[in-house]
Image (cartoon, rainbow, N blue to C red):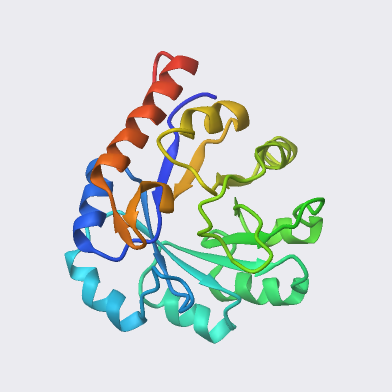
Amino acid sequence: MNGRISLKTCGITRADDAAAAVGLGADWLGFIFYPPSPRNLSREQYTALLPKLPATKKVAVCVEPSPAELAGLAALGFDALQVHFPHTTPAHVIGAWAETVGINRLWLAPRLPPGQDVKPEWLPLADTFLLDTFHPDKFGGTGETGDWPKFTRHREAHPGKTWILSGGLNPENIAAAVTATGAKFIDVNSGVEQAPGIKSPAKLQALVLALHNAAKHENPRY
């Protein structure tokens, strides 16, 4: 594990939480556009929140969008679009997302059951892949720890891609997670909350401190 680890704080619903996350070193803020999520925002709610947000990179998180829906989110000025989808999604559907926003802005977050890996035909369609904990009925946000060996295998097999580790990361396990996986980019959500959609500054601070300490242990120049 060499160099700085990028941090995305996802499920932001309040300006104060966004400011706290960025103040503690978050590189990305994630906003969820998926009505079943307790952290869901409408486009109108996000537009109202936007003037109050700090100037940092922002990613829209959505589930199986139509190209038109994805284009609508992209038009709000997001730096990236994170799309969750079942592993059975046809490649031409994923290709339409890539055509809509570009492979450099598309983050693919496939729901991979045990024994399933990222399909080779997906790899040319995005520069960034996020691997979250598998749940048969949910797209992320479970708070459960993911399959770290699977993440490590993908990261090592395809070093030209950006791999984001997600799923149940919190101040207590983040050091073990980055040490075990060599992750250079992590995504946190429920593990730094006091309630769904409400971040805990204390948990955020503890996670960032643990993350820094883990990186320094591996690389004293961090």
